[in-house]
Length: 455
Ligand SMILES: Cc1cc2nc3c(=O)[nH]c(=O)nc-3n(C[C@H](O)[C@H](O)[C@H](O)COP(=O)(O)OP(=O)(O)OC[C@H]3O[C@@H](n4cnc5c(N)ncnc54)[C@H](O)[C@@H]3O)c2cc1C
Image (cartoon, rainbow, N blue to C red; front, side, top):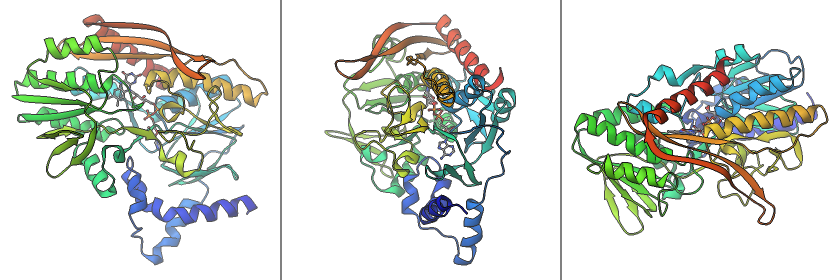
């Protein structure tokens, strides 16, 4: 065994007790630290050995790139790494066995597309684009030994791309206790991290008997700026179609509608005036889960059912690996803003919604960015550099159903040398919702799925 192996395995063993017990919870790894491992002492060694062996993956035929996370960023990354450098041997790892799209899921909540439309196979993506897919949960990684640890053993890398998306940051709405976080996550899921949350939300709104249904918009740089406002429209549309006597309380932790303000305000007034009550500057300070009450600084809001979307943070994998930027409010990695690699390590990259740059956390952003970063890595392997280019953000928002009507925005980013900050550039906003927008949103999604899974 190499010296680095010994070192990393010892460190990994120290951490793995909590990880073993905690990662089953998936999205709320905050629970991991709180739960003591329940594995009997006699079984601990075989269970850990399983984690510490080399994973069964094909022998690398070239420089191995391990991509962690098969979302919009990781899927695009795996495909384009092979396209820009066919000599790369790429493994994409995801803990899920199938992909379910979050974009267009709000329209699915209101029956405008089927679950088939949103669901795609990782096997198809890997077979069609000549890389390997490994279904496993990544538990951590060690940069000294270049190993990624998973619940199916470890994988070695030459380059590592971390694209594990976001996690909920429940303490930011006053829910500190990890058991309470877990309960809140399961009972009133936000619907922004796992597909089970979406299924629960759909059941909730289609079975809601009437009363107060609470939704919220988080503050900070949360996932998909328009999606919570869009979701309020889709929930209201379902209640309207079902003729349920319901009030949707939309508590916005921001001082105003953050995007497509004219369009959403008009929809709330003209289409859903009897349903949606929009309350800006509602900073949630606590949630009484059993008592079904949300507290803000000045008020309390009782509810009958709810979708609670807390502010978000970068994946805990980043913090646990000690690569977090200590000044980052969302616990993102300390990376080069133009090349995406860790400062001081050009073999490890962070992309997608876990990135440190303030680009909109969107699937389209992650997709266009991953094409660029794949090219950066391919060039690095050949000793070249390529010029920075901005990601593109494109976001459709469904407003009305039967037929589907939507509005849209496209934007780019530029770096301001004076302020040393990124800002929006070349924005095209359509706030008039219509059926053309609705059809365009579905055509856009189909094109994205085709690119990530089939061509
Ligand atoms: C309701 C909703 C509507 C949206 N609408 C739009 C839209 O209209 N347009 C748009 O552009 N974007 C939209 N988005 C945003 C978009 O879904 C995200 O920005 C996008 O998914 C980010 O891609 P990602 O690859 O960074 O993260 P994800 O797509 O979340 O992928 C991360 C992957 O990493 C995996 N993973 C995480 N941790 C581990 C681990 N430890 N081990 C193994 N695997 C792991 C996860 O299983 C997941 O598959 C919407 C999101 C939501 C929730």
